[in-house]
Length: 237
Image (cartoon, rainbow, N blue to C red; front, side):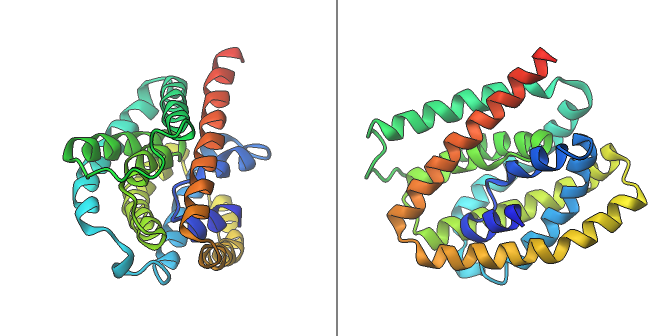
């Protein structure tokens, strides 16, 4: 339900909380495999709220090719490279971005879209969403400075991750060797996930533009510290 709430309120970029919560009671890889199809189901349900008029199509056109490349690269990393390096680098980059905003350098400034930055953000998001279900920070670092309306920000994020989660569901299921018991558990979780999306969407409607952006930056910092903790802890065990 917590993941669904994030998708309904902010478009789905902060679902990193899912695996740590499930990892308390099951293997992290199994948790990631179970969440992959759940993400797809929640994303498709969320599209009833985030319709095409809330998508920034020019930005999606720039971001999606990098997303596809990043997911492919992330699959290779998941199989052959220590993912904790990716977590640490992404955490440090995200904290630096948030620090610049808190200092006031990004406040009130609307930047123009950039093809190079979009491709980089899309690729980084694809890699991190594949290795740790945490593709939100790179995408947010590109979209937030554009000054999009709160509806367009959430809708664009939602559509971006709908595409990404559809692409990565198959590889994650293959990596986790999906068992019959996980399908049953996933079906049990679906009603709570859908309720979470609806509740998050209701909250979104109550927030004004400034409140939503402040919450998004706050969630970026929390996500970054979680990634940093996961990355460092991976080398301490």
